[in-house]
Amino acid sequence: RRILLVTGNRGKLEEAREVLGEYGVEVEQAQAWKLEVQSESLEEIALQAARIAYAQLRRPLAVEDAGLFINALNGFPGPYSSYAYKTIGIPGVLRLLEGAADRRGCFRAAVAYIAPLVERVFTGEVCGSIAREPRGSQGFGFDPIFIPEGYTRTFAELGPGVKNRISHRARAFRRLGEWLSRRDPL
Ligand code: ITT
Ligand code: NA
Image (cartoon, rainbow, N blue to C red; front, top):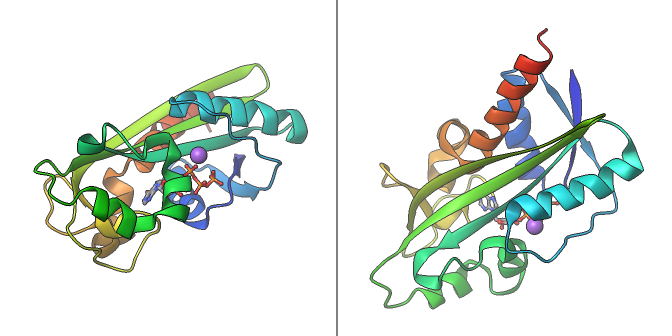
């Protein structure tokens, strides 16, 4: 079995590949004209983007939208994480948290899957805290400042072995993998 993942993010692609591989699902990267609707809901953003991609590609596909929701910032950057990363970046986020007593936050992901006569959205979450300075060199995006609950090191220090067991993305794609294998057993 094979699905397309419409994304420009290599790190996301590799993590999705690793997780769906456990279910015998191959993931191919697809480029499609990608509209990002303005919404506070990751599910809504992923689903709308998947519908538009499906209209162009007409093959079973997934679109994932993810973000980092920080408590002290009322959930910012959340659905705007990609934009925040490119603009204020990690230093900007750390600056916003200067003096904050509560450094907790969660990564969330929504994976929208579309195939003939099917539309499904699967979600995943991992909570933890925001480090005081960036540490580690693995992963991507905000990984150098995210410390998952139960650990002292960041995702960028822990690496893909740990991240792919517990991350928001791993959880969402695992739900998709489970659903695909129930629906269409090998
Ligand atoms: P596509 O839309 O092309 O898939 P993107 O990078 O724009 O790629 P998102 O809109 O889902 O993807 O962006 C979410 C941003 O949140 C992403 O660019 C990272 O900065 C951050 N992010 C999401 N998941 C992350 C993770 O697992 N580790 C670190 N940062 C993450
Ligand atoms: Na997005």
